[in-house]
Image (cartoon, rainbow, N blue to C red; front, side, top):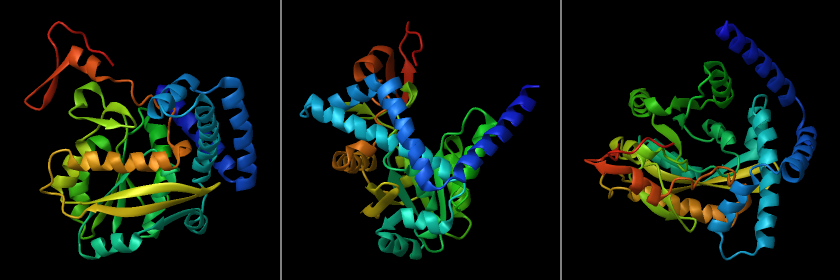
Length: 318
């Protein structure tokens, strides 16, 4: 019964999404304008989280400047929603006009030498449109890591949209196995890593200073990159105008196997911070990025032989 209900909801969601995606961009942006008024003026979507994140990240800015960034964030975020809906029906031509890539010459050079590339990205700009990268690279298999949704039907729906333009989705828990498997296809890989999420407590092994705050960071991507000798590339995303983005590829380290522990992770967050400070309104400030603190971690957990354990007498926190 439950399976039948989910299947019905899947088809309804697919149909509704498809119909919305058929609307032209001018109409979608009118919907975005209405959504912006609702989110920023009526609902005040995640206002406390956004303001806290901005205030901690930019202590030098006045309240007026922070309000300005928050308003621009809401405008961009509403655009991001309708742009992601549109992805279901966008053509190759539309995507290549609206999501451009620079620095592809160097990326294609690396790929022509038979090397695979790890492209580090953040929740910046429209990361969903980055799935159009296969149109810009030569003779390579493009894929991206993602967290599967708990509902298998809705996970299938989002996976279908993300894979429409040739980039494959790899579930996080299967990342290394799948990357090694795809690497045997005879083609070099371009693997997209969005690595600025908040790690679970038991996955915290490294802390950095990021956006003026002590921040726990994910390090699993670095281990995969070094193990498979991928070239470390950063994708600097900017919004050039409404509905238009550019991703500039910069090779940070071509040889990664012998790098120091956490060097890739540290360099990635340094690059990401530069991108955010350049265009702060297109970063995902509504995510409660800094909800886990070092003091809380030290109180409840300890790391022994590279693994995080709950301290004796403590109950698990989430």
